[in-house]
Amino acid sequence: MPLLLLALALLWPGTAQASPVVLIDAGHGGFDHGIKHQGLREKDIVLQVAKALKRHLELLGVDAILSRRLDRQMSISERLAWLKAHEGAQVLLSLHLSSTQRARVYVAWLPRAQTPQELYLWQHRQRPYLPQSLELARAVLQSLRREAGLKVSLLQLPLPLLSQAASAAVLLELPHPRAAPYDNPMFRDSVVEAILKGLLRYVQ
Image 1 (tube, rainbow, N blue to C red):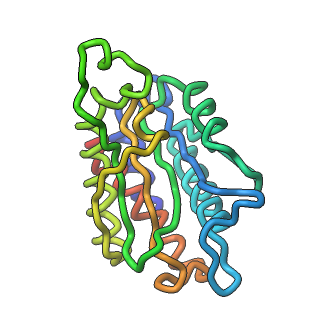
Image 2 (image 1 turned 45 degrees about the horizontal axis):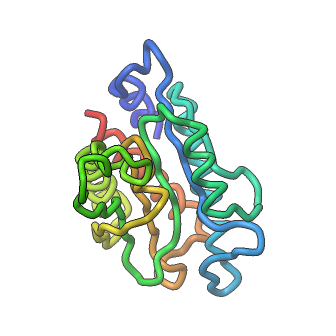
């Protein structure tokens, strides 16, 4: 991990001048447990991954901001308000678990604009950033395959948090707990490292 962190520090654009900002959204929380399997809960797993990513990114001088630090429920409206409050961030990564044995990386699906005015609607803010989002999604997908040995699919969905992001934005679903040993710290570390390497490939 130290060599990876050094490489990220050298290659992340603007690190030496101004700290870039990465938004990390840990899905679910509070009474919303998400997927549950043999005592493991989605809300806990994604928060652990989010906090680990934040620690490593901040070692690089990257400002990583979490949507939640604690086990608390957040509505989609609250998450969208958090997103809007941090305009200017370079990356949005939302973390969830998949209902299948495969990991999934989602980017926004945006309908074709009906009128020129629709290009300026808030819900279409992701439109000019979709190429960057696809690039980020492919980088994370390839890293999860190579570094963590996961089966990963790239998909598009009309998800509000992605379609309203004015930056590269992806939603990552890690495999269902029945297919991944989340109670093993080594496995969790490999997932975190793979995501970090995906970020590195995106910014190169």
